[in-house]
Image (tube, rainbow, N blue to C red):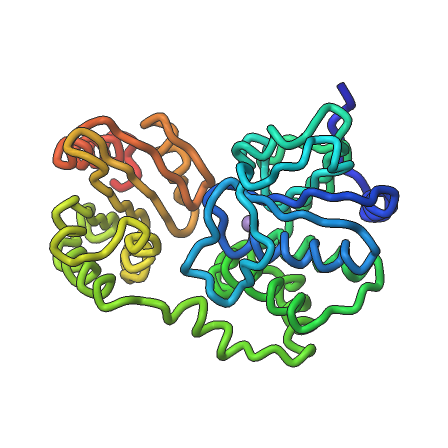
Length: 329
Ligand SMILES: [Mn+2]
């Protein structure tokens, strides 16, 4: 077993040049950063004369029409043998397991390249370029472009802009740095239409989704003097609004927009005996601790868990835990 280390940008790029046939992958449930970074790396490798194949163990998300789904494969669509690929390059994956069934397409001889920004990355690659101080994997990919002096096409710039904008919450999260903005400057300088891109990313709600949100907003509750806010989605809300489960993604942000709030959570009823919970917080609060208590996990400011109880009981358990931990006097 090779020692797990992070490589310098120079060593990582030199190693990239030594291989020719690449399989590129990102994580399951792919989002803007995973896909935008993968597409930008595909473009770079092609221009270095490499053969590339894209694979992801999921369908291309319909909510990202600004990114190209051209050449997107799921593992079962790839008939070639593992020997076809000399190398696997992953973007935005903290561990190899996050690629799902992609690992079945490679052999022990496959050289793995790991590009990421998660602090939890376990350096699973033979070559790792992991930068936890970057707000998005897209920023890490930009550094690779710059190091190799590879000019950015508008398509590359768009892919990286989507990656960085989505992962930094439109340059609002605490992970946003001077570097994020410097990279954005370079991307926008290529002449990409950021008004159009931002509309394609964010102005995507259907009327059904609006009607779902109106139901959910009507039931938002607060406690601890307004410092904790929460909401819930019942299965009947989906039926009545005609929205899908995916439409609830992002609803938790509305809770965070409340002025006094410090900790928020959103409960989705998966079935009458199971609830999926997401947590977010502001300032010094730590919702990773709450999610971990209930068998889940995540980051300090964003976490989640699954509680095998009905909605009402899960709600009581979470509030009791927040009370017990004396988050608020
Ligand atoms: Mn990311």
